[in-house]
Amino acid sequence: QKEVEQDPGPLSVPEGAIVSLNCTYSNSAFQYFMWYRQYSRKGPELLMYTYSSGNKEDGRFTAQVDKSSKYISLFIRDSQPSDSATYLCAMRKGGSEKLVFGKGMKLTVNP
Amino acid sequence: DAGVIQSPRHEVTEMGQEVTLRCKPISGHNSLFWYRQTMMRGLELLIYFNNNVPIDDSGMPEDRFSAKMPNASFSTLKIQPSEPRDSAVYFCASSPHTGIQETQYFGPGTRLLVL
Image (cartoon, rainbow over all chains, first blue to last red; front, side, top):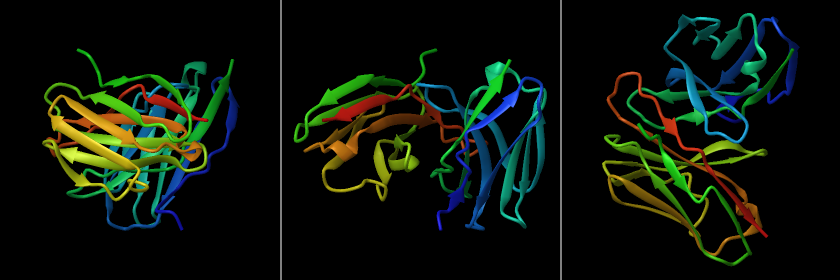
């Protein structure tokens, strides 16, 4: 079993839809949880950063962490064509700089 | 402010040849990471440095891969000899290692094709 599991999709939605992206993990030592966005032929860029359990909201984006279930989610409200990208979850243990990534979910938002 | 710089952006080589990928981290960042991304395996950490010292190289696939960081502003990842299965996008990332909401900033990547 991989440490971090993410459905690679692809996922295609109409503009304005609510998008839900998810990852599960097996290592309970993970404390920091991130979502990166990667546009085609570009490097990943940090989108959301969460410590431990709870929710974090930034504009149209909400990140949720449920440590009891080892499950993290990213919600995108009012999705836009510019949100079309690959979304990767990532996580790390406290005191470590080493990130473990999910394989990424390719999202397409159709106008 | 320039981001992480990688060169070359594209590399096509033949099996058995030596390949050298280069990275210039963001000025002031003291942690540097090398990743490999493929469709099959996703984004994998190969090695990372802190203050120019290799901290964890457990992701380096085999002895054909080596990485160096001779100073704070330059790092190389070398593959010798290269094999077709090394074809991937190689990313370099750097981080300020402040311990507070650390973010890794990725370069644009080097697309490597080994024929």
